[in-house]
Image (cartoon, rainbow, N blue to C red; front, side, top):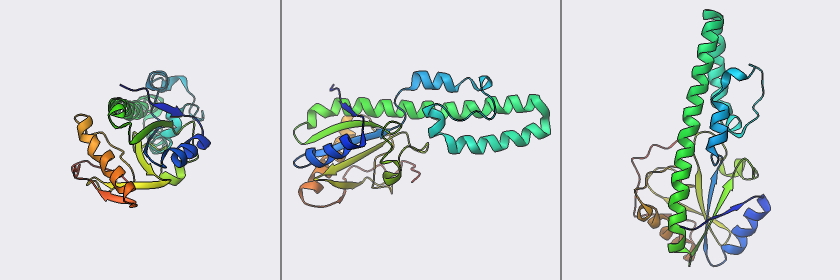
Amino acid sequence: MTNIITLHSAWDVDRHIVLDSADKLVLIRFSSYTSAETEAEEYSRPTQRGPTTSASTAVEGSLASSSSALSTRKHKRCDAGGVDGCVVTSVTAAALLSTNANEHYLRTRQMDALLSELAPKVCKYCTMYFVDTREVTAFNDLYELGHDRDPFAVMLFYRNRHIRVDVGTGNNNKINFFAFEDLYDFLPIVDAAYKAGRQGRSIISCDRKFSTVALRR
């Protein structure tokens, strides 16, 4: 397995997309779910926080939209059921958010392991990088990153061009799911993107399809 370099600034990301993709495919795994242990433990202690405490951890920030909806339901129950109902609902809401975050962490770790295994096999024509979207936020709006809907987003670039790959999910912009039995399930995606780049195309259909994967765009 190969240790894939993590990029820590938007300048680094841009530089590698421009320079490395001159003759190689550049694969970047974006994710905000990269350090589960500390943050999941912190988020699992809802009773230690006041109701007006602002989001101070990366998990809370990335799950802000879900937290807002659950908080609304919490206040409604507080009015109806008193303090006990409020405490129970607060714990339930935190548990739901923690479960969602833990699932995203698991999927990100699985993808990272697969990419680390794949990297040496494609090193002649593909370079891979990791980016934490909590640290590097410049691309979050542009590529719809850093939210709680997807565990990660794998994106491909060639000669400073974003290469989109149709894998049958309806979202050609990025790979944001994990449904791969091994690296040979993912390899056709990399090969297809490299082929498209070499041909001067920005989109290509991959022979390997994942049409059963439920994606939220």
